[in-house]
Image (cartoon, one colour):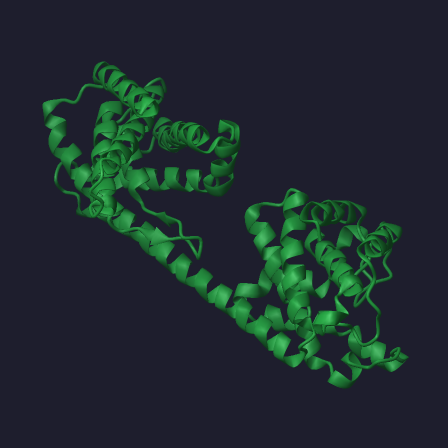
Amino acid sequence: MSALLLTLTVCLALLVVGWFNSPIEVREWQAIIGLLVLALAAELLPVQLGNTGIHVTATMPVICAAIVVHGALAGGLIDGFVTMFAGYMALRRRKDIHRWLWISFNASQAMISAIGAGILISLIPYSRASYLSTGMLWASILSVGLYMAINSSAVAWMKSRIEGRSMFYWLSTQWRMVGPKYVIHGLIALIVIAPYNLTHGWSMVAVFVPVLAARNYLRLRHRQMNTYRETVRALGLMIQHAHPYTSGHLYRVSVWGAKTASCLGLSEEDAELVSDAAMLHDIGKIAVSEEILDKPGKLNEDEWKVIHKHPETGAQILSEITLFESLSDWVGSHHERPDGKGYPHGLRDDQIPIQSKIIAVVDAFDAMVVDSEIGEKRPYRMPRTLPEAIQELRNNAGSQFDPKVVAAFTEVVEGMNV
């Protein structure tokens, strides 16, 4: 309750400051109401991002357009009303008082974000009537950044009070998740401002075009990601049916690959791609006969030549699918070595993608420690203990494996208590 009272107090104080900073003139109300209608329409048309359960809307660019064109107070009032309306629609079936407390907090922190960003933007010298000016461009992009900085700080502060972790933890978590989207929202805000400045007043049809276009793009992106994930799963199942012993192996290297990539500092998106590439790294083995793959003894020279072709075969298969073009090189190089003694092309250290180096380490580790009791024992190799496998990776760091990847993977394994 104290957090809510503090939030409401700050919100009221900023409303007063916003009134003096950028009072709304009578002639502006018609246009502001038009922007409010546009913001409500955008809020009612959410789009889900992949399978994350996170829904986004094109509301923020409209709010930022209001801030840049009409000032802090206008942006705050629009954002507060839209947030309150959206909160009521989401919680309308709940009858307890906590519903209104939550709606009030969300609306207040939304107004704080919009008015705070608007006040700071007003310090930038730009003409609200000059759409093509550099000042307008910076104002549009910065309005998004400032809005999200204030909004993220408010949410992180509230989560730190409720869940006990530090505010910095929640703030860094939010920025990692949505940071790259901020500039995109700023550019969309600039696109919204363009027809808005040209049409004025109630002539809002042209303004709906970029908002609906943005929503349509997000929907198409969502469908594309669904198709991508379904294809990864289908190809993974195909590999598993062709060679059953790979089932648990593919899952484990996929998980370890993503965690190792994150440990090395790769972005969340890149870590997910490493996970997908690890899941599909053995797809080229569908062209290798079971007699060779399941041979209980050592392979002869001709059989090794066949095995050595599977990375290149896998890369060729993936390169034919547009969604997997970026993964094909990683799969094709996952048996290359820093010392140049790998296959199929004998690439050396700096010629091998870091993603391929990650797959090489996690693949080798899992092949060494695979549990024979669950039916995944390799026909040509006895499993090793965890310490033995880690030591083997360290012994070959710099020759067969990248030292930085080995160090990161060791940290991951120790952290997972495998």
